[in-house]
Image (cartoon, rainbow, N blue to C red):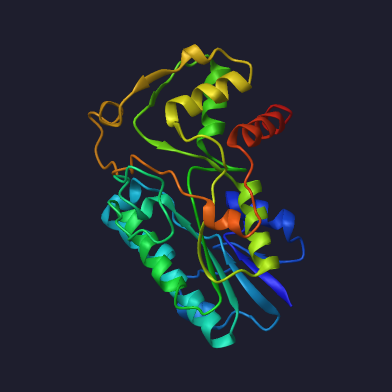
Length: 283
């Protein structure tokens, strides 16, 4: 029996493939999870665990009519289709969630039991997917934030700007912690191997919460650039004059106590960042 990884070419999917080299790894071109007939005709006979890393993540484009359809197709209907198969075949379903299912107004880290309160189309589509995943008896919803891995992401963008001599203005009124895909994949593997109680588990890297601006400064500093080149701006100032922008949660900090109680401690995001930058700059 094996694992099925959907979204295998995405940032987290690539990290999962490193941990599960024998897994059945597929992307949208091989299986459109939003198509129930395609899902039903897929060969699940050797699959024991579905790890759903597939998602529509174009947060701003999701605010358009076409983007809304695409977001709900992948993030809600797609999860519902996988959940239906998991129920029928009594499979384990691991589903990746996001801080965007919350409105970001809480004055403390978000817990797994906090009510869903999304403020964007993307957030609402992901919240719907969470509810669908919970219909599977043996489910693990891994909720994360600020994903950094192999692909387009904030850290890679900052490194490119630093190399080009750009001094960016970065928002200082959104707070969170990054979730490096190497660590997220290890956390998922830990849950599957130790089999704690099914449910939602928050997972980001540990360490002090940070603003996007301070995260950018740490990226510059760690890569050997002058962190003083980063200037602060507010979310409202950053998006002034721009249309079709999705609202962002101001607080994306996730409480990690539940995951840590299972025996998995995510390393400090600064340690993960240093490793990430070393790999990026050696390419």
